[in-house]
Length: 521
Image (cartoon, rainbow, N blue to C red; front, side, top):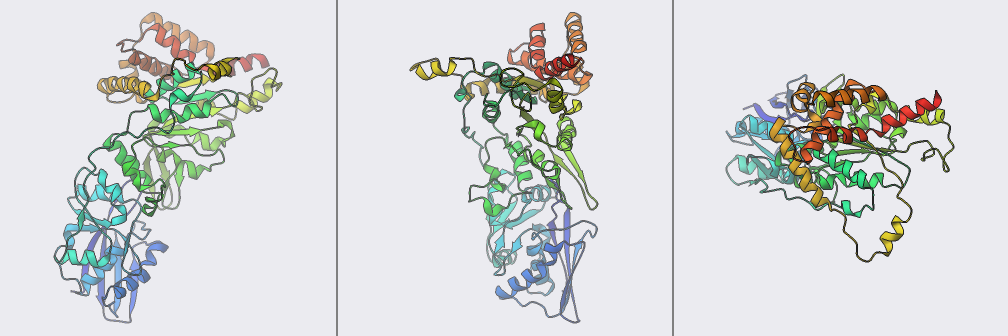
C-alpha cells in the first residue's frame, strides 16, 4: 500500500483540532515534500524522521514521498508531528503491517536515534482524543501531566520501536493511571507571620472568600507584598478539574523535560496550590496577555484559577494595565492574529500594590510633593481600570512600639494561621456555590439584583454615599458583591447596613482621589 493515514492533534491554544497525516509514496526522484501550512520546525521533521528510521533499522524509501497535513488551512508548528509522520511512512512503505492505526492518535518528537521526547500542549490533545473515542500515544515525558485525566485513555512510550511493536501486537505500552487525589500543599508562608495589619488581613480574607480583586495602597515596607503572597495559602485547594485546566495552560508554555528540574511546567499535574504569578512592572503587553504568530498564553492565563500580583502598579505601562480590563470582567482573553484567533481562560484574582505618591509616602514629614504631582502619578491608572477593584485598602505603617513589644514578649497570643482563615473562606465559598453556582465576584448584574437585595433605607444610604464619592454604577454592583461576601462570612442570609458600611470602608482609593481633587480646587 503506497498510501496511509495517521491521526494526530495540533496545538491551538487550549483546544487541539484533529490533524490527519496523509503519506503517499510514488515513483520519482527521491524527495520528501511537506504540505499543509507547516512552520519551520515542522519542515525540519523530514531530517529527524529520516535519521530516526534509519537508526531504528528501517529503510527510508528512496522514492518521492508526499506528506499532507490536513486540514491545509490550519497552522502547524512544533515537533509533535514527528512520530505520526514516521508511522505513516512506515505504513505506506509496508514496513509496518497493522490494522490498528485508526484506533489511536499519536504525538511525539523524535530524536535522531528514534527516542521519543515530550511535547507542549499534551493535555488539550488528550482531552480532545478522549472526547472522540480514540486512545492517545505520547512520549513518556508527558506521563505525569496525564494523571489528571478522568479516564485512562493514554499510553506512553519512550522509543519509536516500542510503538511499532505495540501496533503489531508484539509488545505492550504503559497505560497512564489517574492520580487518586490532589492533597493540599503546605503554603510557603503563613498569615501569622505578619505582625499587626489586622484590617489588611481582614480584607485579604474577604477577597479570598468572594474571589474579589484587591488593591493595597501604602508606604514602602508596610507588608503589602507579604500580604499578597499569603493569599494562595488561604484559598481552597484546587479541585481535580481546576488542576487539569491549570496544567493544560502551563503545558502550552513549559517543556516537559523540565519536570525533573524543579521548574514549573506540565508537572502541574501535581500542583496542589493555586498559581501565584508576580510579573515585573517592565513586562510587555504580549508577555502579559499572550501573543505570537500562533498565540501562546501570557501571565494572565498562567494565573488562571489563581492569583495575579502586580507590585508597583503605576510603574506598569498604561496600555498593559488597560489590557486587563476585559479579562477581569469576562474571565477569558481573546488574542487575534492574522493566522489564528485563540481564546485563553483567564479567571484569575488580581491583587495589586502601590505607593500613595512618587516618593512612596503620604504628604507630611517624609513627603512634600505637591498635590498636582501626586495626582499626576495616580492618574497613570485609568478610572475604568480602578473601577474593577472590589476592594482598595490602605496598609499603614505599624504604630510606634509594636515591634519592640513583639520582640520582648516571650509568650503572647498567637496570630491566626492561614489554615484557620482558610476554613472560614471555604465555608463562605460553599454558601456562594450552593446559592448561585459561582463566587460573588463573578455575579452578573441580574444576579446581583437577585442575590444582593437591600432594604429601601439601606439602598438610599448606599446611593447617597456613591454620589458624594462620584462613583459609577459598576462601583454600586461591586460594593454589593463585597457586602454579600461579608454576610456569607457571618452566615447571614440578608445584607445588613453593617455589611454595606464595611464594604464602603474598603474604598480608600476613591477617598484619596476625592481629597486630592478638593485640595486642587
